Length: 392
Image 1 (tube, helix red, strand yellow):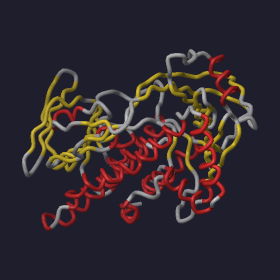
Image 2 (image 1 turned 45 degrees about the horizontal axis):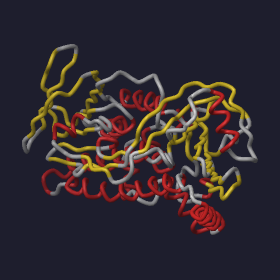
Image 3 (image 1 turned 135 degrees about the vertical axis):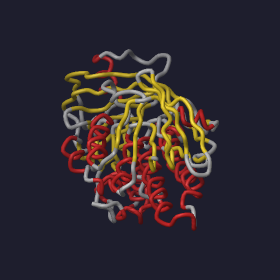
Image 4 (image 1 turned 120 degrees about the horizontal axis):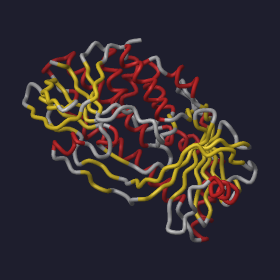
C-alpha cells in the first residue's frame, strides 16, 4: 500500500510529492493529462514559495531559466505611484521573485520528484472509498481500471477537481468572477527586473518578466476590449504602460482568454483525503497569488503527513490542516481581491484616493515592507519553522 497517492501533477502536487518522497514515503502521482505545452497561466514564484522549494534542490535550475524580479511598480495613467522593492526584504534567503512559466516550474519539479524515488502515472481517477485505515482510489488508464490503496490521498487536480467532486465538497464564491486575456511576448524597452501594474480609467495592464526571453501581459476582458493581435497589445502597452519605459512588442508568442473566480472549498479535508491548491481555492491572477498559495498548501500538508507518521496515533497533526489553511488562504485572497479592486477603479475620486494611498505606502518604510511581505506571502504561513526538516 502506498503512503500517499497524489492526484494532479501541477506545482502543488509535485511540491507535495517531492517533500514526501524525500522523507522516504512511498508516493505516486497520477495525472489525467500529459504535461501541457500550450499557454502557461502562472508566471511568478514569490519568496515564500522559493523558501519552500529551496530544500528540494530545484531553485538553481529555476533561477537559470527565470527572470529575477526585484521590484513591483505601480502606475496610474503612465505615472509612477510607487515601486515596491522585493530586494528590501530581510529574514529570507530570497529577496526577489522569479518570473518563470508554470511549464518550466513543473518540468523542474517533475525531475526532482522522479529523482527522489517518486512514481508518476498517466491515469484518471474515477472513484474512491475510504475507511479509518486507508483510501481506495479507482483509476482508469488505457481503458483499464485498477484500485490503488493508500494511507492518504491528496487532491491537487485543479479548479475542476474530480477528488473534490467525489468527496462531495462544495466550492463557494467569495468574490467576483472576472475574465482576462493573457499573452507572452518578446518586448524591448521594458525593465528586466520589475513587474508592473499599469492602471488607467479605461482599464489596466499587468506586465511581468517571463523566462528571461519574454514578458507576460494581462488585462481584463470587457465587451469593448481589443482583439488579441500584436497591434492591439502594442496599442495597450503604449496607452497604459509606464511613460518612463516605452515597450515595443517584437513578437507575440501566445495568447489565451480565461475566466477566473475567487472561491474557497467549504472543507479542505475529509477523512484521509485532503485538498490543496486550486482544488481547494481559486483566485484571479491579480498579484500572482494563486500558484504560490498552492505550493504553501503542499508544504503544510506534506509536513503534517510526515509528522503524523512519525508520532503515530498519539496525535493527529492533520486535524488542523483544513482550518489553518482556510485562514491562510483567506488572508492571501484578500491581497488578490484588493489588487483586483484597485486595478478596476474608474471614478476620478476613487482613483485619486488610490494613487495617494499607494504613494504614501511606498514612502513609508514600514508600510512599504508590509506590502512586499504580503505579495511575497511571507506574512501568512505558519509552517516556516518546518522548512529545515526537508532532507537535503
